[in-house]
Length: 111
Picture 1 (tube, rainbow, N blue to C red):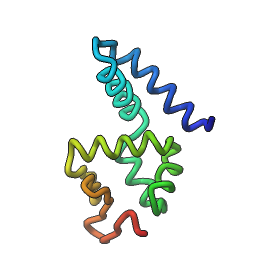
Picture 2: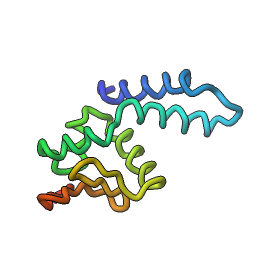
Picture 3: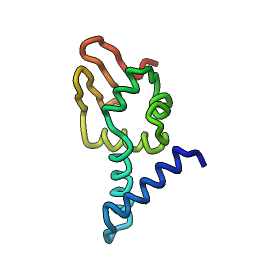
């Protein structure tokens, strides 16, 4: 099993400990996954990865040193809750998933 996957699983399991156990198994899984995502994925780092040359989803996962499944689930969860995230000159749109620099016009993904 790749180290990125092991890390995602380990954080997920710690998420169970940190977020507590409830009566509903599905809610427990969602809380644990959300806790792991919060610990491992930061929108600011996504922007940095794009600036440094991540051209597609797989480049982004590699640049963030993340398990692709975890990143995918994070982006879907963000899309369900938010239209966009702003940081400085950059806007991350979650519907569809795009990173845009308002000043230079740089867009991600560029493929």
